[in-house]
Image (cartoon, rainbow, N blue to C red; front, side, top):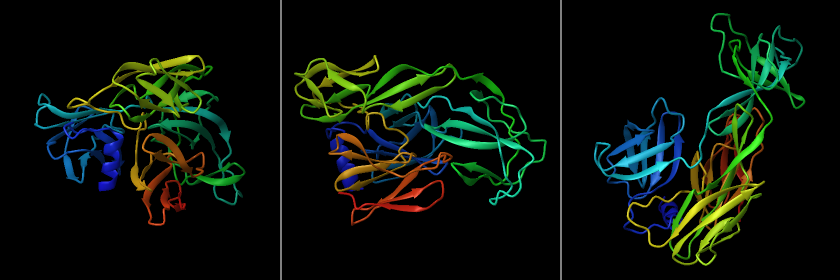
Length: 373
């Protein structure tokens, strides 16, 4: 933990006098949240999404707190020195990536269902295939139904609680039979609209503002927002976007990062398919209480570890990320997940021989990547 905190300290460009800054947030199980930050000993009260929560434990720069029952993802976190919201807060964190609303769109109707893996007996009902977006991850799912749906419809998630449920159902996916459910009620989702033509509505630049000292590097990320009249989708287009700084005597944009040159104020612009977004840049000494965005927009971190003095982490997708030279995000590796996987991989640990151990959420197997150099 000491090497991890030290590396994050360097990444965030912290002065010893600066108050704590949240550098990572990760969900532990379903009921608690870990907040990894600097100097947490003075924090006596924690608010998550404006609701005061119970502090379970604190150690080595990590506060573990109870996650509110109404919260599926922490959009904002406030640590206080006192017990009242009016007390001076130690730090405030807002999610740099808006998760947005969940959605469920019909991809296929009248999908054939078998009652076992041998495909010897067809079921008396059929299935609907949905593309779901929940908590920042997109995946496909199947439900048994007797409703008539149309491809492109967006549905609510509802089930028939009166009619007896059905047993296991097997669906042919990519040429092989897969168990879609072990038992289920009949799906009765209600249409809420139809998908229109998807278009790029805007892009976002992360961090949305940059504060640093001279001679530092900070990673940049660009997120494209697509809309179809009902749902909003976000896609990372950092590798495809271009970045330019207004005054390159103060800072320069190179290799998807900002490098600070001299004290002063300027801005950086990201451009993608005719759309642009800007972020203000302030170069100088950091004042007490400065909050510095972490990872330029990465969210939902599930686990972190050190590998060859570099930070590696997972975030509920099939990707394993690495912060190269503590300035640039790169995909270290990825594990191919079935399209029905609701979650990706979780970083377990790194080993002395520089291997990365992962657990695949869709089948619980452990995968070893590496050695990594």
